[in-house]
Image (cartoon, rainbow, N blue to C red; front, top):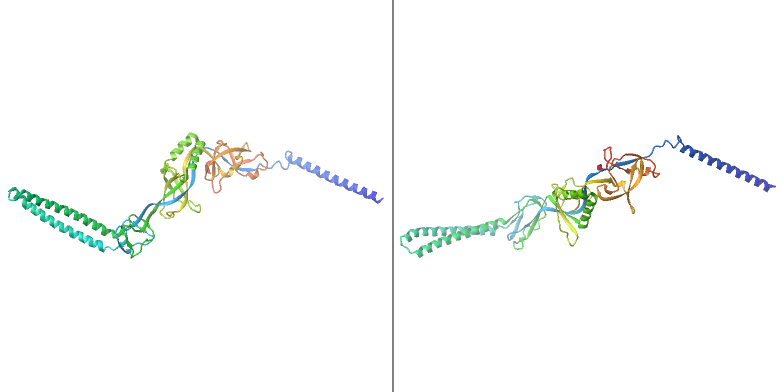
Length: 411
């Protein structure tokens, strides 16, 4: 009897639970129909906003970042040109010196004595010349009157010419002695910054060994010796040709004018040097040992920020495209299957495969897949939860930019 009652109660409870679940299911179905029906609670939700740019053709300079070494425009090694003992150092190490400024004083005593001797020898030769000239003048009327023989007159004239030659030789010796005496005062050959003294007072220096005394470097303007892989250079030219055809080639040829190419210097911390340099030339020969091509740029350096031998990176434009489309990097999805962007047409987003070329700052240059006037999504990807659902495109502004409209040419 008890077992019969228990079975009846269990069946009653199961029936009640089933009815409850059925009622909840019916209520959920009604709510879903209400949300989907016109005027339902979900019908007034607006489409999500996404930031877009409008693509267009524009002229683009293809920039390359390369390593470089700083080199002074002029370097002078101050060396001894006479033998002697250094008496004084007359400059402050690490200071700026002017051309012609005296840097070292070598003992001038022996050279001053040689100079005095040369002056005395010149005086003696000039006295001999005066005597020979006077004798020749006296013999001239005598030979005409046949008072002396012709041979005696020839001997007198020859002695005068020898005396003249001796005077010329002594003048040259005097000049050499004066020069050597001047070399005892070592002067700066160029203006620039001088380093440490390589000799001290009391050191014996030699003209034969050309003892180096100091080094002067002119750094108000410096050279940048830039190296670039020949393979990278060829790749850049191929990308230029692929992106712009004949117009790109013409633009690249125009950019080949080295004097018109600006150079931006990047320091070790990534900061840009405010002053721009210019590209002087690009070598046409590839180094067979390294496969590198050498370029040289010139950069103003009045404040001395760039030091000789310093390693920096430079950014320069080696080619240009007359008409190209660029998009921000964040708009491009890169994967193993290729690169894609999301294009909005009639407020509906769609994935588009593209082909990207060189990097241009924070943008990619698009070689294929986009046309001018298309809207490319840059921001708001997380709002597009349902693929193909309508969106509301709004102009995208780059961070830190105050411009309201968005276009590819601004980034």
